[in-house]
Image (cartoon, rainbow, N blue to C red; front, top):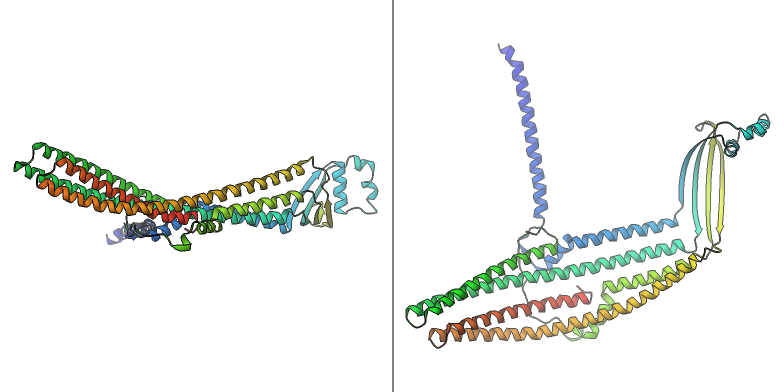
Length: 472
């Protein structure tokens, strides 16, 4: 009985072991996959993020920057493609010909070098020349072609491709600065929204205290019941604004994550704050110095200068169409009636000089079009220069204005806070009404919001100055 059961037991045991091994392997691979996914998802996780860390994350993950980097890679390949014009072109061709065409047939016989004193009469006979029958020929061709002079087309094409790549690099730099500026705006928008949430929480707490105060004064017979009702309405309004502030705060966080390029639901703590301080003093904040710096640093202006050089080379390229071209070539042949058992070999060395005498005015009009494009680029340079100078002046004046507005707004907050305390004490003493107290609280909230907004604008102005001067 043991002998009968033992094979079955062994088979079942082997099956279970195989199944267990497969299960263990699947579980192991699942853990590896989960670990990789977790690593990928947690690559964006951080407990705290300063403004500079946000910049670093944006430079790594922003989608627009990735697109611009791909464009730069493509421009690099275009430059290498243009450089390939300097190098020889080497080809190998294998051709099989089966024909009864008299010209091709007789040419195949000559290429195969099979004419002898014995068969020359038959191959030159009218019967063969008129009806050669099916002639087979296998030809191998190895060719080398080297341009010697192409009217500057290859050299200028390479220089233009290099200028284009450098222009794309400036475009990447411009996009990088715009991305950093947008990240700064989004980053401080989150801080502003968070500060507004804190303010509304404080206002709600104050409104609750005013409601309690109104209820106590009503019980003491010092105020009418309408004060209690008004306090309820005011508290409900403040709670609604608090809910709206929380919603705006979450949207601001989502918008920041999108600008950085990380998952939209990423959570972290922002460590930078809205600071109050001057951008620069002395020569570094002189309007003429800022405009000069902008013209020297702005990547879009540098890109335009490179494109202007490119257009100028385009004129030289168009002029080169009128120059002769010189090309050298070398061909090595082998021909035979079968696949290379007894091939005949030959070569051809060619040097071709080509003159462009008349092209139907195509080259002339192409030259005029290139000159027009260059002149247009000159006008664009003047326009962009004026635009940059205007942007710098606007950023400069905006910063000076916001700096003054922030000082005034800060004083207004101090004044509103004192007025609120005085009005609150007067209401407790029965000297003023709840309407005045609510109005004073609203004035304090408005002053506080105005101060936060001006402080936000002041911080963004600093980054905008760096953006328009090309130093971000």
